[in-house]
Image (tube, rainbow, N blue to C red):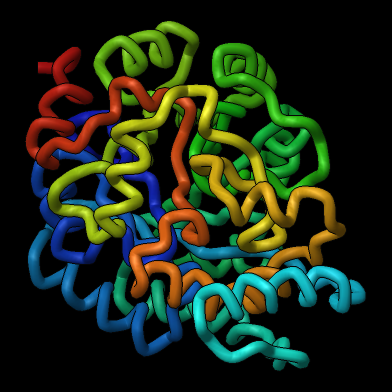
Length: 334
């Protein structure tokens, strides 16, 4: 359905981790390169799509956030702790925030249709039926991210073409959209495969040919890898982020909502520990509140206040070239 040579997808990772020229190179290598639209303006996304189109004729995807905007929580207690971190980093304290919402999801969908993006995926939520119809009318293949069988059924009922089953092991944000407990990939994939008559992507903890083979044996049609592509020479992840992954153990990659307000897996650090006892506002409010801290930490080489996302399969995720990663992930299909 994705019209790619190898059933390997580069996970979309917000924050410019995989620049558009690298995403195009991944597509040119026979896999599915990805643009993460989360956090991008319409203008920025338009530029990235243009770059990928100029560098490849192979399929690629754009990943869109489909999250709701809940009422913000009281922020006094959490902000007091954030201001102590700001003082440590030597940046201005903040007492109030502008919680402006992003441009409508439909605007991003319209842009993808305008520029003939072949594959659009959604995370953090479900697209509306009207957006699904609009994309299908334009010939776009739609993927949806889930963490439970119940979420997979909802995606199927919406008319989504391909379901991305994200296991508990995955790094970065939990892509599902309910408060259900996370499930390990080995348990999740066969149950999703049995429940829906759709292609399934296995995502979470896959970093070499063994993980690929296991996912296919469990019934997955494709695999998606994130940390493995993040920790490459070509990715634009901060060098300290890559180093943290390279020296960490599997027990160091923990769930936290400290950076964004949504559950995500990353390498344990002081930021996660300092905020663990507090009630944290939901995404996107906490994400807005910590933006300056995360930026300052990167500029100052302060790894303890950076969001160092990583999956649990760390010991086989040392820094490599993209070409080596693709060769390993596609070895079973050559």
